[in-house]
Length: 525
Image 1 (cartoon, rainbow, N blue to C red):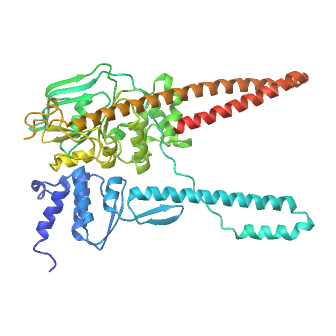
Image 2: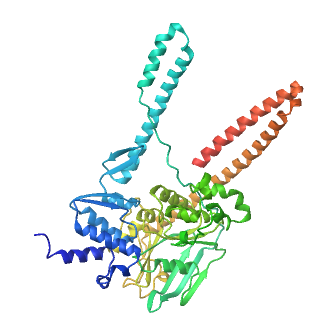
Image 3: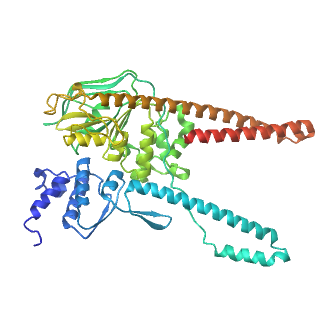
């Protein structure tokens, strides 16, 4: 009745779902790494089946396959589940209710996470509008009291206003949480083929992780490497970055400038340096004046820049490591788990920055929302071989399930196998690539044209911002010089000169204000 006869089968189901092979079941827990021990603790909790299951970041240390399995398990869980997660995809699939902790209160939204974002924005906008109206009303009352406080004829009205003010329950809106705001430096132009691997083999002792793999990375692609933990994603990333391999050839394209963000990049920082000194140590001479601005963009402001790296949190170290990638322009970004330790807002801003990046990106991430909204191609690493799928994460899942044709929600093309030179003959029984349907070809061309147009618009916007900033600096310098002259006692001895100086000062002030308005509009656009 308590399920004793089925418990062993349930244990096997949970362990398999969380990525444990049958050969791992008899190993001692102490032999596993910290990440795998977290999975063991999660498995124990799931098997207990409590009536209220509390999960704080359950997807940490889980690969995509394990996350998919956990989603299905929790969706079918018969009791209540309360969880904290920075995985948007996971929240949308599992949760039917979002409880927000904000403004010292809990607010319930009975909807998915994506819908919650829309409703929250509407609610906060309404709250801001209510506060604006209240502030105007309070200001009018205070002005009335100030003007007529000592007027005997208005004494009763003043007292009435004072009592009204005391009864008003003030609307308090906390300041919006700071967000990372940054863009990668404009990349230098590279050749069409950015990098190519031909017959590359990488083994660790008798274990072959990559077996004669072929991969071509073209300019402008955003490639996601996926696969279960230990499949060889990070190994492939290290090979692309110039790491060792036993056989094959790695060909770097023309004028390729590469930057590599390793999975343990935060651990490579110098612990006894301050955040400012750490970024200063690798900064080119011409970027030194901008270092404080770069750190500020990554939420290091005030005394934070003098914190020792050793006392920073995991998220702060990751942000500092990302900040170092802005020091030198590059046209190929290799990023292994850049979203680790980042919250939802920071992931969103990183996603926006990478989508507006004009170069090529190859990345590893276990955040499916991040992959789905960034990747133009998914490369699966499995069993020493690689298989390419042209499309986002949804296409990849559909093709993995064996669907022959998948219409994307937004009308984009079909997933397909990579060209033959990207797939080893031994990689799959389906090693012959499927032909790309005509509609998919047209869609791909349309998407490329849209991407080029977006890049042209972004380039024009950046150029406009630069021109505005240059003009603002010129006018502010001129205004500063004029104010210096006006500070001299002899300046106002000549009435005509004083009049002209006042008019020029007013004109310059108005011109600078107008340029700042244009800059803000252009920057927001």
